[in-house]
Amino acid sequence: MLKSHGFKWHRKNQYWYAPGTRHGEADTGFMAAVVADLRAADLTVTTAQPEATPSA
Image 1 (cartoon, rainbow, N blue to C red):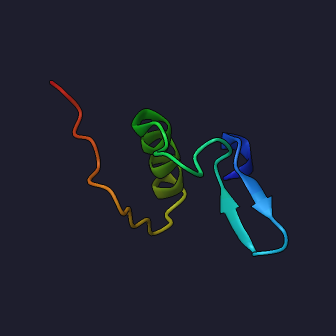
Image 2 (cartoon, rainbow, N blue to C red; image 1 turned 45 degrees about the horizontal axis):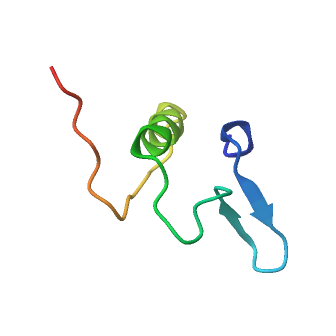
């Protein structure tokens, strides 16, 4: 599922990463979409940054 969002697997260090986010923060909209898809697949997700709240 992460691959479908553009994540890459770091073979040497064994972790998934979003390209272009190493020295900065990932776009909150992008991360919200990833979190929503993971939760829709009934996976537990913990975020390090506060999640954006949708505006009414």
